[in-house]
Image (cartoon, rainbow, N blue to C red; front, side, top):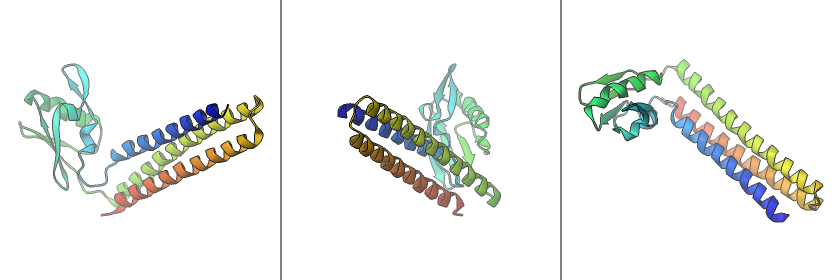
Length: 187
């Protein structure tokens, strides 16, 4: 029975860790006014009829603090790369010189920075909801195990462990969002 409880806890912890990884991946897509290859690397480009990540059809680099450059492996991919950037609605306009595509990141206004902070906080709240859901599932499993004969005092310990796990992951989210907020508001 103890192995079963340990497995429940491990599964919940993996779910919580996945929530953190997902949050970090989503926050990379939030512009901070600085050029970053992450802005476009995950965009899907139509490559001979199938959607392919940008980083698999072009070399992506940052030429200066405000410019991202995409050098396609094949010149025929310039059009689809531009189209993917337009369709992603990133608030930037791609420029094509026949060899490569450049994206210049405009400076953020104060209002836009506040909107981005709100969006980041919303993503953080979604991640917290995911963590609380994992905790709820874990607590339900522990309570069911106690009903099925697992000792109550060990069940209480497992519930405390679940609560501590939830608290630590929630604090990690607060740190990540605080760091992103600072990054967004830094001019």
